[in-house]
Amino acid sequence: MSVVSDLKAARDLITPRTRWIKDDEITVKGFSGNIDNEDLMDLFLHIGLTEKTCFCASGAIKFVTKNNDTRYEAAIKALGNVVKEDDDEEKYEDFEFENIVTEWNDDSERTHAQVLAAFDEAIKQKSKK
Image (cartoon, rainbow, N blue to C red; front, side, top):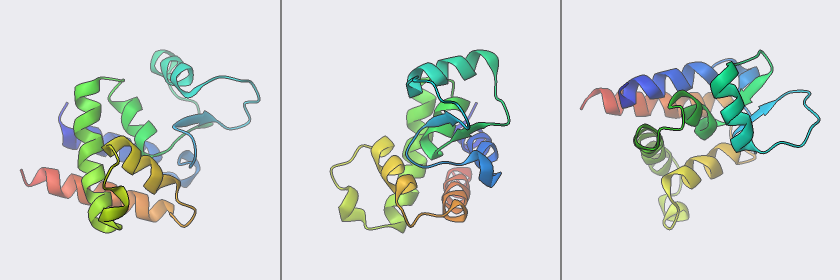
């Protein structure tokens, strides 16, 4: 898959407002157990999604790239570049792209519409190349 395909798939995954979250890469609404994000990601890569599965921006990318480092890094960098342009670039000066996207997604002022718009812009920019 291409970077554009991965970005589109991740965007589609969190397009329903109820599928987008902050403060976790992946979670299951109503789950009360103790399981870390990596274990949840592995589980959902094997069994698929439920209607209660939710993702942040980076978690959605990680899920659609199936933890393939090369694909993940390309997609997260594309989204991270958009986020840096949109926000205070100096704020993210020493951050890796995954952390830029995570911090930006989890900002208390961040809206679902802003996250989808950032995906749209990253898709647009990568489609030009």
